[in-house]
Image (cartoon, rainbow, N blue to C red; front, side):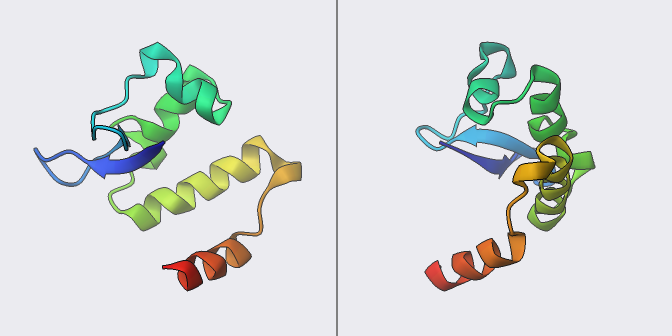
Length: 91
């Protein structure tokens, strides 16, 4: 499992971190690519230090990821509004 975390050095850039030990995830190992079914270039686009279009907030990153999903898997794009409503009820 992964989550987007911020680097303590500047607190603005988002990076992919492991839930298990909070470590930064390396793209060279292929773990991210296999987990999400994406290429290394797409993993860097989404999860590197400049990922999600240089997103500075979780909201900006989420919007970028939604657009990425719609572009990569147009026939399988989720109903984001329904998912958000379910998530809000479960928090």
